[in-house]
Length: 167
Ligand code: S3P
Image 1 (cartoon, protein in one colour):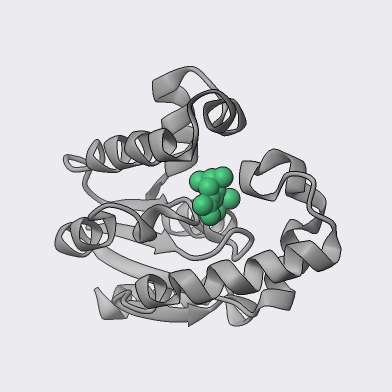
Image 2: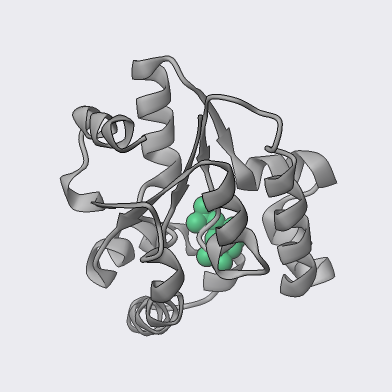
């Protein structure tokens, strides 16, 4: 079974994939890392030299490459479910879990990492909060179409059982 973790930047997708993967012995895959491996380039560099539209195509390609992988916890990028037909594909091919979080919670987690994320480059705290609120509103309908919604702030090692119970 494939489990896709989705949610906004800073909601803990990669963090929890790593923790649950280690604890429960399930393989993990980080979609951003897969794109970087495929392209021999960083996400930042891809955005800078090829632009976001092209990045979304590469993201789609990396997602489709997971088709033949069984039993894996996949940490998607924050935008993955909101582009192309990605959300439908994920739901057809596995269980989609949204790690939901309030804007202030996301802000705390990404404030110090704005330079490693191309969409956040140069944003100061207030602008960042405005950006999070606007993008979250835009993406909410995709995120909330997940099979299961878990609150990021309440996650623990044991939360993984909720995913297994669902699947
Ligand atoms: C993006 C989120 C990033 C990465 C890219 C675009 C987005 O992934 O895919 O910078 O559009 O929200 P993380 O959510 O893992 O930071």
